[in-house]
Every structure is written in structure tokens, then in C-alpha cells.
Amino acid sequence: MKPLSSPKIQKANRLLSQDRGNLPQLLQANAESLPYVDNYFHGVSSVFLFHELPAPARQNVINECFRVLKLGGVFVICDSIQLEDSPELKAAIDNFPVMMHEPYYPHYATDNIVERLQAAGFVEVAQEVHFMSKYFIARKPALSG
Image (cartoon, rainbow, N blue to C red; front, side, top):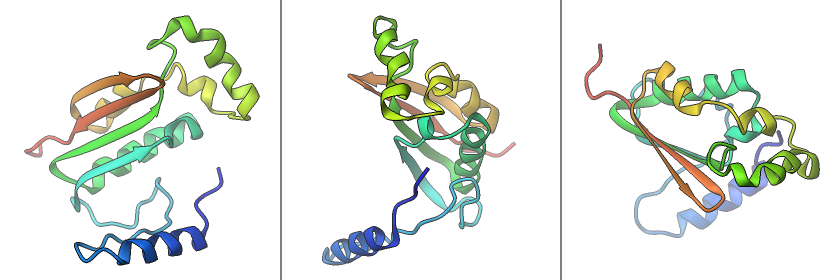
């Protein structure tokens, strides 16, 4: 998987710095080893990453997102639909990795992301499907233990 290039991140940071409100800072990092302390964020999101990852990396990223979330924090994943969401699209889902050179997509298409989220400790896991996108919304328990 090719990460965002440094020039793209620099340009995005320049554009964001033109806003007089809060200044977000973008950085490039390995999602399996996030450079943040535990319990740092109120929310974390991932957009079209999970189908790009091998199964062990998917779990590692979920575990890291759990680690950096504050108690009661929310993790939202937006990615491609999965086979269970639209069985009538099986031919398209099966053909997508061939046409788009997506080696991890076949496993993602049948992977149980809810189970992965729960294994990391997330609760109140919800799923929503909107056309060709699927969302997983999970919460880190408000109290540890």
C-alpha cells in the first residue's frame, strides 16, 4: 500500500492553516503503531483503508485505534460494502480485486469486522450500508474494566 506522499500532506496542512479556527495537523504514520499516547482522542476514523490491509494488519489497526481513544470515544470505519451486504453483487465483488489489483479485498469482502472490533474491546458496534459504502461505528466503553 502506498502512503500519502509528504508533499500532499504538506499541501493539505497549508490549506488547512488558512482556516482561522482550530488547526488540525496531518501526519503520516503507520496505523499499526500510532504515534499517540493512550486515551488521546475523542474520535478516530478510517476511510477506505481496511480493504487495503491483510487480515492481521486489520486487527492491529483496530487495536491501535482502541488504544488511542479516550474512554467513551468513537471509532468510525468507512469502507467498501461486503458480500453479506449485497449478495446480488457477488460477481462485481469477486471481480473488483482482479480489475483493481486489490490483493486483500477478497478476504475483506467476507471478514467479520464486527467480531474484530469486539475482540479489541469495542462495544455498541453498529453497521450502516449506504450504496457501495459500509460504515462501522463502535464505542470504547466509558468505564475501563
